[in-house]
Image (spheres, helix red, strand yellow):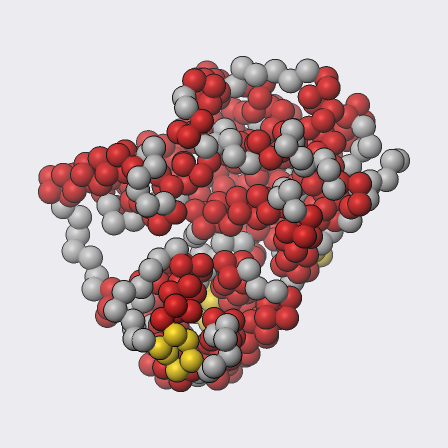
Length: 471
């Protein structure tokens, strides 16, 4: 088998790279969604997703982070690529465990990582075909070489994927027919995620609008995704063949392809789509600014016609609600180490921490988890239930939380004067939370900063900025 090393990938992601174009093509969302289902059917990946991922409770956050990470991996600057690859490997090295059948899983498993890249390649080829844009042999070979190079950047080599395009298809068919399972993660993605996906930031304050749209879009998205999957895979994991779904799927892909070819580039660039979903990503003056404003007006009108139930005062939300919205990151109804690790991953990713600060952050979260177990895990089952948390929220231990706040303070206090001035504070929240805070003091001492963070993390004080990161 031909060995590909990281040194051989330096120039493959140049100006003519197909992958660099794909990461800015909103059609690729169809391919990534389809690939995620195939990934989730791999026993190791499926278990890792269920036990450690926040993709169900925070899909928009996961989408944004995945996009940012992929763009860094494909950056022309090899230093940016290497830094991001190292960060991803540190992240994955912390994810391992045992599935309900007693089988070990490890996010650093080279065969499983190769399968992730394989599903992305095959789903990308399928995306092109279904959207009416066929790839000739040279283009397919270039695309496959780039995906192998992508694997090399994060794995160190690409030996787990066949060296040639001709060898890839038997490998892919064998994986589909012999190695995939009907995992819980597959069912969660198709039937829970699509049906219950939370509103994107643009519509978070317009629940009636989002609920009405999701009631239709959720089942349609599931049907389109299932219809695009290999028939042998659908039979293997017993996915339903919904009448009319294939015609709907072809129509969705063709429409996406036509939109990409006919609309102005500024309208279909993935950055523009993201700014449409999340106003914090733009000033509102882009090509979709008018659409966002009209959507807001329509939502306001709908609220007048069908008013939503009174919202709970965010400043005084209950410990029970804080548990559900902030602490239970994986959405499984209880608090365990994967929830706290997800918070650490999110902060480390958004602040782009180096290895030293990232390690400090994880150790701080581990200390908080020990505090929680010692003080709140009354039945000793290794997790904290919502009831256990709500019963003792007012007296939560704080030593671990202080360590977390100390890390945030240190990485924000760039001039090491033991105070966060207004510029440093604003930079922190713009970088991490895409928000500018108003009315903040001229400076924050370490103690004041720590008190504010502890008040939020104990559920005692509302914070729009911290909410936007963790809830």
